[in-house]
Length: 232
Image 1 (cartoon, rainbow, N blue to C red):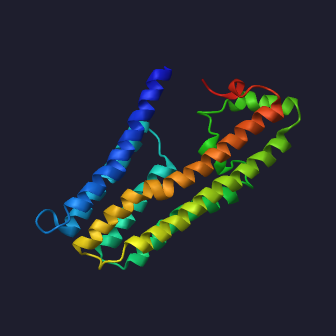
Image 2: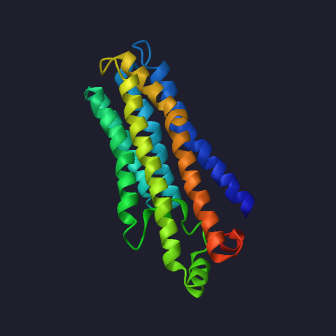
Image 3: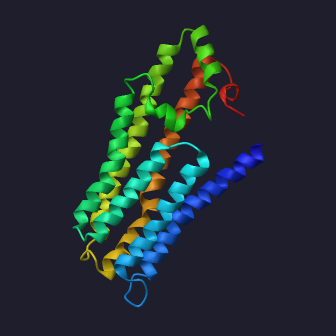
């Protein structure tokens, strides 16, 4: 079972990488000249892959994933702004607005019964919540654990705010040509290609830090091994 899950995760990772990054980058970078698809049709073709993959992933998973839906909307907005030949400022604002909105949602939901951080890094696919809650109740440490979750929420929110700032800077620096031109489409491809090393890696470091912090606190607060609370 573990091998099957690992294989599915690898397939999901490589599928995301291929359909959301590699194929769109190749199309926008090398097929946007008038000799091939042209700037408009290369954008349409490039956006068809992440949209199609996102819809297929939603169908395969059998449930609506908010982040998948958000990703599809983001791609549609990028394509719409580009095809309408709107100023690059619109894309820069959009690129910054979506992660900023998620960061705000993380902070706001921290004051509700269902903090978003639990869905992001402590969901029930990872943590055996019935067992963890039972131990916390027995030791009367639910309030202490909630304070630790709050700290991790600030770390997670900061990762999205960092992503927001880097998204905006990247778009402003790279998108300098006239919208609707071959050069502009190639710049979109370059921006997409750079999004992983420039944006995703720093953000993932903060997310991993938040996860490590919570895992260490679970072990410290309960006095039990972390493996006791991990779904195998």
